Amino acid sequence: MNLARLIPSFEQVHVESGEILFKQGEPGDSLYFIVDGIIRVFLDTEAADERKSPYKEIACLGPGECFGEMALLTGEPRSANIQAMTHSTLLKLSRENFEHLIKKHPSLAVNFAGLLASRLTSTNAVVSGRKEMAIPQKQLLSLSGGGEVASAIVKPPPFYLPLKALKDKRFLGLILVTILCFLSLPLFRKTGLNDSQVILIELLLAATIIWSLNIVSYHAVSVALAVLVVLFGVTTPEKALSGFSSSSWFLVLGIFAISAAIAKTGLLYRFVLLVMKYFPPSYMGQIFGLAFSGLVLTPVIPSANGRVILASPLVFTLSEILGFKKRDNGSVGMAMASLLGFGHMSFMFMNGTATCLLALSLLPSEVSSSVTWGYWLKAAFPLGILFFLFSYLAVVLLYRTKEIAKLNPLVIEAQLKTLGPLTAHEKISLATIFICLIGFLTQPWHHINVAWVAMLSFLILFAGSVLEEKTVRADIDWNFLISFGALVGFGNVISASGLSGIIASEMKPYLEIFIENPLILLWVIVLAVLGLRFILPLPPALLVSILSIVPVTSAFGLHPFVIALVVLASANPWFLPHQNWTYQNLLETTEGRLFDHKQTLKLACVHVFIILAVVAISFPYWKALGLIP
Image 1 (cartoon, helix red, strand yellow):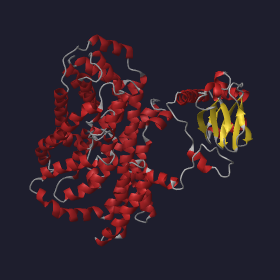
Image 2 (image 1 turned 120 degrees about the horizontal axis):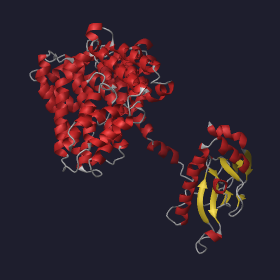
Image 3 (image 1 turned 90 degrees about the horizontal axis):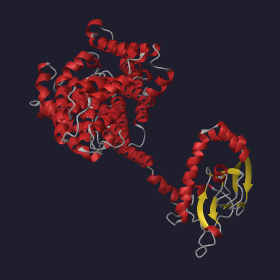
Image 4 (image 1 turned 60 degrees about the horizontal axis):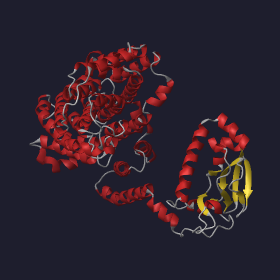
């Protein structure tokens, strides 16, 4: 679009094959864009090695590329010869118009400067023999009757395009999805399922494959599920899009708004500094303080990624103050403590992160409507506290370090003084958080849905100018909100179809061995979720696991909410960096200066055993609450 706006400033030029547009050493008075054709760039005899060739090929340019920018930017004469290799159509921009556009659009100067640097690097590489001249084969394929082409250009074989299509990940993925769905369709029909149920299974199978291959954004696939169930006549639009009208959707919106407000103010930084001030200045004391501050802030800043991104600069600063070198045990321990507190404690609170609310929304409606903020904390408390303590001990033992230095309290004092007193926006945000948490805790008395408490917080922040329209547009994760509504709607369609009951009745005979020991069944769920996370992103993994596991386990008397807690606690491994968005954000925001991935793999393995252990220890507590028979 920007290029289209610039076209009136250009003059259209047609050149014949073999025509020289300008020669090396001539004054530069114009810039050219290639609309159609192939242009070659070469140096004359003086600049080339005469013993090898009368000229030196530098580059071969095709449609969409430009040339002549060096002379306009540097004021130097033309640095190379330009010749049309085919009949070509060009857009010519004069020096006068070029300077006018640069003044009108300063960002163009940055783009051309980058292009200039790239061209100089490429030219030096070609001249020195480190790089061969690239010929734009793709552009040549699009030419039709464009005139004679130099013999140096090798035409691609006729099967070039099909081969390229076969190398396309999306193309192969869609072919695989089509084949598997085609082969599985007769099998599902033989089970006695009705047409709507078969379509739902096929859609979920196709979505799972696409999610696992990562060939399309999982947000797009989530929306496609809601759209396709309507187009295939499985359900009504109202049912398919019911997730967007659910209270959970508005609760997530309100929570994202609170996170955006916190990120805009200095509350997080101020709070963590205060925690660091009052905890022991030693390595063990500081990593506990760091992890503990993240735990306390989890229900206040309900976004694991947001918490980690905001805390990363402070973690790096504390590591430097304590005297830890790049990627030594001390700095790795600091990073892993922040990952624990700011990232992995989300499952302990209903509003710990949006995925907690997604898991809750996928449970049967009679279950999700009965779970309050306080009840969630009560049920998850032993699981969360034990997970926190065991993980902290694992960090201390795996990343032991000599005490190099102790944190100087004067440094913390100086930082707090620099922040100064609470700003008006910080006071409004703090009051809003207090109102929100009180509203969550007292829900059993006032019976107001927590979604409207969160939305009230949103309105207070908006009215107090803490949140602006630009912040709402840019800092709220609308992609997740859209996929959240679509996934919840699809889950509602699955529940209404009766498919869950059929899955439970079919699987029950195979799982009767777990009737006497439900703990083993919970361990199997932990391992199954960990395995599923190797192939699926977190939100789709929650959808697949909860929709498939809850109907089966409910038949054995296990409360669906326990299953949701176990799934959430197990769903954040980091054997591979991309498995865990929070971990990957921590790695990227610290620019790899605190740790590298190999250093954290041993903790990732211990993480699995910690989950199994805390589930086992929490088992009697859940039994006492009546969540396990």
